[in-house]
Amino acid sequence: MPSQFVITCSRVMAEQNLTIAFAESATAGRLCSEFSLVPDSGKVLIGGITCYDACVKEDLLGVSKDLVDKYTPESAPVTKALAIGLKKIMTADIYVAVTGLTTAGGSETPEKPVGTMFIHICFQDRHISSHQVFNGNAEEIMIQTVDLAAKLVMGELSSFPVS
Image (tube, rainbow, N blue to C red; front, side, top):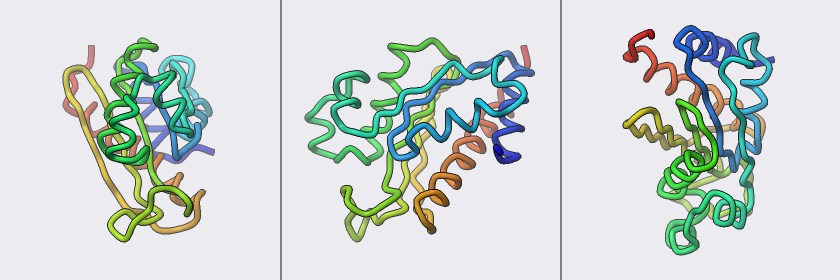
């Protein structure tokens, strides 16, 4: 069941006739899934792409291999590039991209431990970025990331005039 943050975000988006699309790496489609379970899903959800492996980020979403190699697939610059790439293949009002580390085995370092998550949102001419470190197992990290993404979107919508 989606959290109250996702439910409220979806309702507010529906009231404002706004749509959303996702490019998800670490959350592996969880954001899209959560938004599909709300009553207003048909009004707001365009779709999502799960880009867990770097080849999907590069081949489908157009993230340059140089950017991935320089910053790692789990980084703020790559997350921003995912959101921008998503805009080229889906038409929505809001684009949300997520990368990060929900388990060991990725690009973790002492400065970027497991639990580090990156979110980038494109909404109109604005770019909103977030970098958080969450505690818990992989599912708990994903849930916290989904809630944060919904909160960030709602924060932008509160300043957006209702059409």
